[in-house]
Image (cartoon, rainbow, N blue to C red; front, side, top):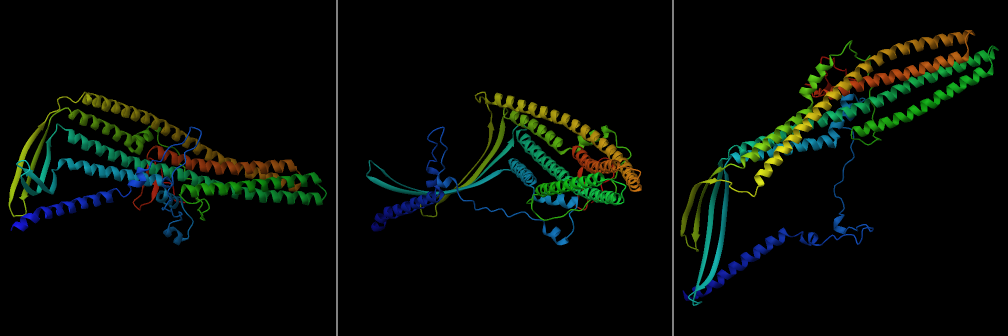
Length: 501
């Protein structure tokens, strides 16, 4: 028995040493990166000398981004890409939409986290300790080891609306993030549509210029026939050759521009500029309406559906909720606390139950004037947010007003260009017939051909301007929607849907 009592301090010391070693190992594991962060990166030796980073400050990237390609389902179909296909690809690849979606999911997680304040907070604690000491001026030694296990509960019961205001604040932040996500999607769609119609216009201009080139060949053949017949001079042939060369030069330039716009469209889809793909040209006439709705109808639509405007409203409500939260901080709060646990003494089975319960009233009496300044700051932030909302509302009105009249102008330009192409075609045919009959000059023929070439280009540009103006109006009114089939389409007020290419 005496030997056991003598050996007990040594055993207890061994336990303490083991616990200390364990703690050291845990701390070593937590500080495994300490040498890297402990070493100072330093600074430049002077203002004129660039800073040289240490090797650990420029680690090799282990993340390799795979090159973007066309989606497998579109590749397998083997079809030309429609506008909806292009929009789909762009939304899949665009990093802005991915970032906006991640932000909305982060806001959703913050909202779920904030709800936790309505529930009791329960935690568990456990621990063990060993004490070796002396009494009676060091004459008597004693050893004590205690173990503790407990459950603790804290519950906020009442705080004059502060908890509710905090939840309302993060809820409005979530709504704003979701609206912002929608706004980013509409922005990407508009950018892709502009790039798409730029490429379509380039291809249409090439087709038109190829027709002009063939007409120039016809003119040259007619000039040679008249020259061989002795009824025209060599000057007619040379002028026709010049016109043919100019037509070829214009065609070469347009083909170069087409490759540029093609690369721009690939980039808008999030693909490499040299990605192989083909698009379908929209067929059929432009679905013009006799009249548009009144501009006030479009302004009302934008007021209801513009996602960026809705996000700004949510931000204003969020700022108001934050003011209420700060105001509640000046009032008392009531908390309920409770705990239950067991304390074990020594190595025996001796233990005691411990439990407690209380209601706590916390009253902020003096906070160093922080509460007053925090409230002033919150109210100023709310005023700034509402001012930005008013500014955005005015900007939305201007954008809708501008895009509305741009679309009306584009519609009139489409109608005028159709009349222009018809009259220019008839004029060229008459001039060609007169020249072949020997009653017209080569200058009249070349002038008519130039007018027809210009009319074709103007018609192609007018058509593209109409589609882009329609897309811009749809964006500015917030009416870019997803159909029931899951495809994206433009749906302005009472306007017929633009047919798929």
